[in-house]
Length: 257
Image 1 (tube, rainbow, N blue to C red):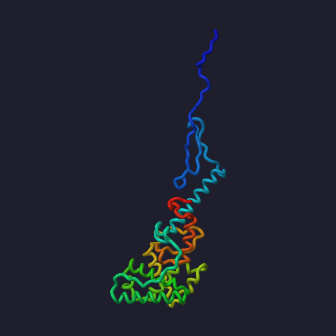
Image 2: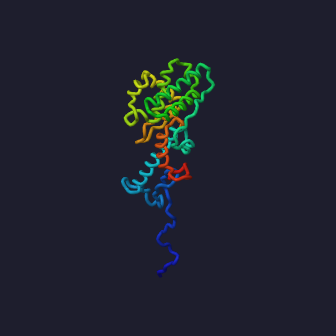
Image 3: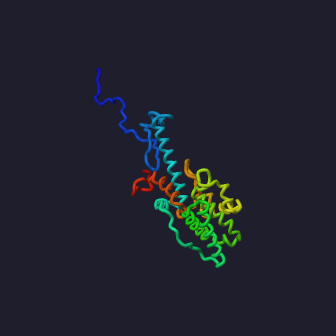
């Protein structure tokens, strides 16, 4: 006698839902994934090289890396995230020189250095605002390194160092600037060794070892960490690059738009 049972087992059926086993995050957000239904059915299959999905993921990672590099560079130029978000392109307002507590003789020398920088800003670069920027740079240097004048009696090289440093911070030297570096020193009437003093000055404000690499296509600006030593035209460039990431007022600066 042949019989059948209604409860005989039929084909095996797996009712488990597919699960995400590989997830790609970019800036904390899902950018791509692929699914493995079960570990004992088939090995996970990553996106093929050259597939549209892989290309999209690579593009997202590249864009994120580019954004992070740009952000670090901009922050180094002006002294941090808050300074970058507050940055504007208004011309620097002239104001009297503010000096730290120096001996009277050193204060007199400091004022003479500032006055010479004012003169050279107009005579060499035809830019009164640069004189204001150099004064503010000089103030920052004397606060950071009040012994600078006491260590050397060469105020002419102090002037050359300040002009060179301010020009480097604003991209005024070189083929894309207003003056070739080799032509600066005859115009200032100081030896080229002042560039070494200027480099040391900048390194005290923003140590070169801590600075990020400038992103591709960025203007050649030596970071100082101080927006108040940057000309309006320099800050306008930085504001434009900043606004590529945060173009809408009130947008969240911690997330790309």
